[in-house]
Length: 397
Image (tube, rainbow, N blue to C red; front, side, top):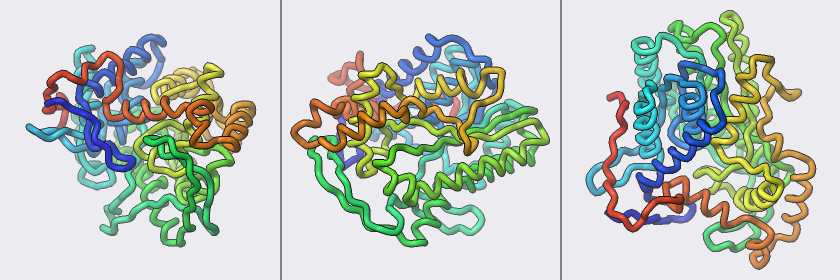
């Protein structure tokens, strides 16, 4: 079929398998171009099919020759029906990993469930023995607690007072004012349940109880802080409370791993275009201005550049892992530079529908968004007839 992007609001309903594969190839080539990292050899990535999770799997495999197991929840393809981008990404990753002689297997299912945890533990036990690094990179808006059976939904809302500020529709380029009503206490607790550290800790507890964590094993989860501009709706809102919980959980997990010489970290990463961030009011406008500034400074990074730098300059240098006063790895250091933030704040004040194309990088934002779904990727013939049915070579059924 000829596959074209089909939009509904801030969601793209289609994905291009060849574009997704080219995206993965580009990330693989970037990691290989940076040289080998003396990193982990057996890696479990929970949330492995897109964004930072996919970048972590690629960096582990092609930076450190690691065997990888990926966990994700994606819709497969079938004749006449397209898969989700994460499915096509994983199929491409596994194809190229196996061609390179690297072990790569995957489990498609609800990572919050006991069933997927048990299936994963059995696969590790059978194939790898133990794990050196556990990457926790889930971005689901919904979680069913496996203990209570209750389904919790996260919300993105301010706490205490309404939030009013600018935002942009990145499809039309229209800058408007937005107002978001504050949350309830129940909203906060639900968001912590979904996006906090509880499930991360449950994964580590399960792996450790089964003796599947190697001596000196590390685990890492990803977080975001961002600027004062977005604080009321993000870091000081419901999601910020969940991130606080996630970051506090790192210390709990680190204590539990101390007897095997292991450790747990949270890496604070930079603002990037993701399916989730595109739906967050204010964030698209901030990112389009940030991209403009960081590209002008020559310090712009995407997911793969961020994670390659995380591995090579923070986690696996052979020395102590540098952290901030709250124990977090700061790979958002270039975004949060005072000069970068001052320039973004000044541009924010003057941003309008009319001047955004010149003072911001709305085109870069839009291209990155389409790239998530395999569209607007260089070197891909989008007029060609494309086979929508793609299998994941190492998928466990």
